[in-house]
Image (cartoon, rainbow, N blue to C red; front, side):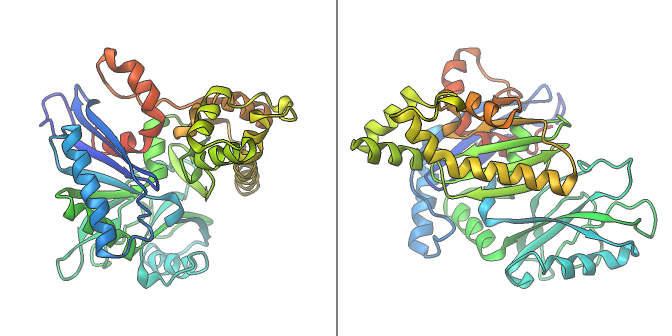
Amino acid sequence: MGLFSKKESFLGIDIGTASIKLVELEPWLGKPKLFTYGYIDIVTDIINSKTPEAQKKIADSLRVLVKKSGARTTTSIAALPTFSVFNSIISLPAMPEKDLPGAIRWEAKKYIPLPLEEMVLDWKIIKHNPETSIQQEVKNMDIAKDEQGKKRFAFNFSKKKEEGAGKNQTKPIMSSKTAPQDIRVLVTAAPQNLVNRYMAIFKLAGLKLISLETESFALSRSLIGQDQSTVLIIDIGSITSDICVIKESVPILNRSIDIGGLSVSRAIADSLKIDLERAEQFKRDFGLGSASGIDQKGVNKTIASALSPIINEIKYVLDLYQSQENQLVEKIVLTGGTALLPNLDQYLQELFSKPVIIGNPWDRIIYPPELKPVLDEIGSRLTVSIGLAMRDIH
């Protein structure tokens, strides 16, 4: 949106496993400007919230959060949890462009553990000639209409849709009628019943849900922007941690693990025989020592031990990316509530011999300077929400 465009604002809403976060941004001189924000601690378990009562509970909390934050729009963008979405890069031989949709669906069956009829499926050609960037026209799930004219969601990686393809399949951007050898395709799929659940919850909350996308795209947008380097984002939430490889601002490898900040606090509480609230305080006060100091007794050793499954997953992702792409990740960006754990960035930097920074999602946002101390403190919790609200502000 330009200088003289209508100042339409957007709500970025992140329904996490232990909280709901909200950020409203509006366009200002071509950049996103903060209007309001808010969050509420609530165990949502949206993946398993299949009953009307469970969905109403989430919707009621979301409605309260919107009201208390003073949000002035109902136009919302939300994110599907990384662990609920299937991503894979597949390779296909040269073939006519018209044969690609069928070939992709056939190949996708090998990687997606659920029937394709139960999934929202789309794809993006990420490499078909040396001059083409994998960032080309990447979008995500938008409101569309099916053959009966009913609203539905479909992934929308390309702005151009293939006419007559049905279910809003996208048309690959090709330079000729025949694709060159070794077509590489980013395939993304989400359960249709989960998408329907999000739509139902937002409708109950009185919000207009215009788009869904994966958390990794929102993280890339808020933390990396147009940086073309290859980055590993580690998002350590309360209950889960997501690990994403971003290349040319596009997530190409995603992993999720059921370990987060709460696991660390519980480990401290069990080790020192203290309550969870005091363990949280110990975690914030002491944090981690350097990688060479993990043998010392007490809180540091307990935290290091609790984080070891995340460390192992990071090693796995780095090795997997290097073996698949024959390239190295250039730097690591930390986010999520546990990103501020004292010395965690230094600890990871020593372990992996790569630059590690704590991501600042406010870097690309205009906001009142007097709010900086507060926003810096909570920014890591709001990273996904910020990235979502940025999506349609250019």
